[in-house]
Length: 84
Image 1 (cartoon, rainbow, N blue to C red):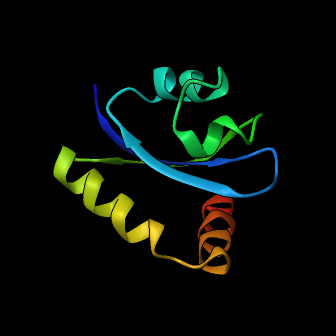
Image 2: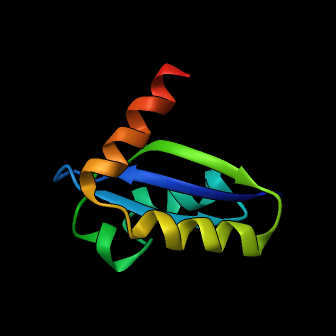
């Protein structure tokens, strides 16, 4: 298992950022409406970005920083990732 930071696009177009050590399981949990409170009311959700981190602490720190980005900055990150 690896530590992963991820972004989901919710049914209302908003973005949700989280971290996990089992990305497939976590995304399925969100899609089933049993993930975070934020995503439960914004189904369906789609995985749009993820980044593997070396440690749990690194993943948690990266999540913290990403959550503080503006929507514009998050969209720029997604755009850059799609061209990589």
